[in-house]
Structure formats: C-alpha cells, structure tokens
Length: 242
Ligand code: 13P
Image 1 (cartoon, helix red, strand yellow):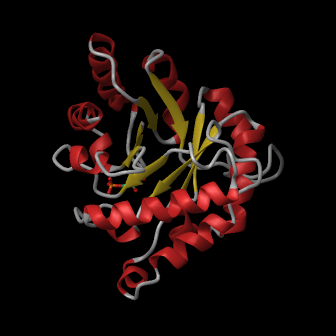
Image 2: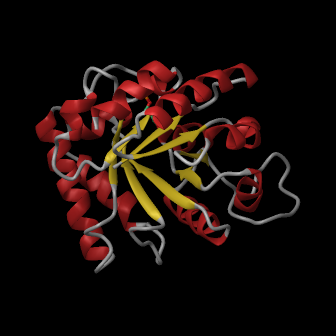
C-alpha cells in the first residue's frame, strides 16, 4: 500500500516540524506501507533532506514541457532536481480550477516519467454524475486517456470522488469496492501483465477513524490524503491503520 499526503496549497517552513515528528515515529516503528508527502513546490527542496529513507517526497503537478518560455510553470525535471521522486497529476482541483483535460494529464504523466518520477493519476466523478448512475462511465473515460507505457512501478491511480474531497463524506464501502473493481478490470485490460498489480488508492475525506475500514476493501491499495495529512498525529494514525 501507498499512503500519500497531498498538502495542496498549505504549508510554510514551520510545517517541517510535522515532517520531523512523522520521521521520528516511522524510524522508531516502521510503517507497514510506503509513505509519501507531496508538499507545495516551495517546500520540496527543504523537505527532502528532512524525510530520511522512510518517507518519499512528491509534487502536486508538473508542466508537460521540460523547459522554455512558460512563465510560472514547473517542469518535472525541476521537481526531480529539487528532490521529488513522485508527482500527482490530474487532481480534480487541477481539472476544475485550471481546466485540465484528460489529454493534457496524459502529457503530464509522460513528462513525469521522462524525468524519472513515479506518477499518481487522479480520477473521480462529480456528485451529479454519481447520482445519475454515470460514475463508471466518467471514470472509464478518464482511464481511457492513460498514457501508454504505464507499469505497476511507474504509475498509481487515485480514485477520488470529487464530492468526497474535503466534505467529510465518503462513499459506502460497497461503492468503493465496486469502483476499485471496475478500475482494476479496466487497468488489467489496458495494460496486460501490469494492470493487475497497479496500486489503486482511495482519496476523499480519509481520516484516522475511517481509514482501517477503507483499507480492508478489496483492490484498495492505500490512500491519497488531503486535510488529515497536514498534522503528523492524524497522518500517522492513518499510516498505522494499514
Ligand atoms: P481530503 O482528504 O481533504 O478530503 O482531500 C482529498 C484529496 O483531494 C487528496 O488529494
């Protein structure tokens, strides 16, 4: 399993104390899963030396190109250079607030691989799409754009129902199982020999008190955690729930 913290647009130098606390605990009692923190870009190079071998560092987005006149954009190569080994692409907040399309997300995925990063690709439906019975259609279409060349070692899928993000609401365990099963089937068909082994994380209001139940669901390969990853105590409780 992979438990990843997406700090989103949160975190200043003072947040490094949380990472130190996390590291101390994981060095004393190793985690039963892989652990990743994706801070804002400004903190990657400061956080990387603090994490030690037990915690990987990732970015929350990357540009498709490796360099050039793209003011404000950050290339995957720059993230790797700063100490990242992972990048998240296609988060619903990028899709929603920055108009990112499935084909752009595939370009970003390839950019991550080009720079040697492992990539978490986020998919998930809106509430209206779930209510109208279209959740699998929506996620299936997002998955149909996944970049060629994906392997169990270079890509993880994060299923994040948009209506569960930051709301405290989560799908039923049956709905999580059904969607993860659907994603597994789709990956296995699209990437023969690899899709069966790709991790499929669940994301959306994962907290210390619901993590253990979610991790028992078949085909759940960890979590992409937002709010509850900001404090070492909560994030640790989720890691320990594995
Ligand atoms: P929350 O855990 O705050 O709901 O956020 C989930 C998320 O979007 C992680 O990428």
